[in-house]
Image 1: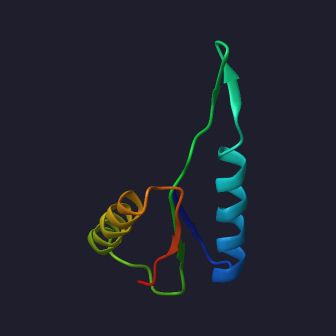
Image 2: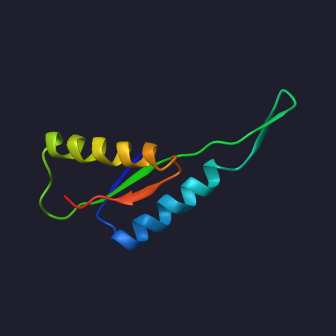
Length: 79
């Protein structure tokens, strides 16, 4: 999940952490208890917008780190 905003990076990270916690809430399905995880990249945007290529490159790096750490990861990307 990618969150972009002009919000303060700390505020945006708080939103991402709350979303991650809500997604992780266990759900019963066909007599089994399922839980989910989410990895999110927080991208505070300033006046200068990054190119799509740079954004995708940074997201790929974050996705690799999140997968290596077991997922359920929130990271702020500085562009």
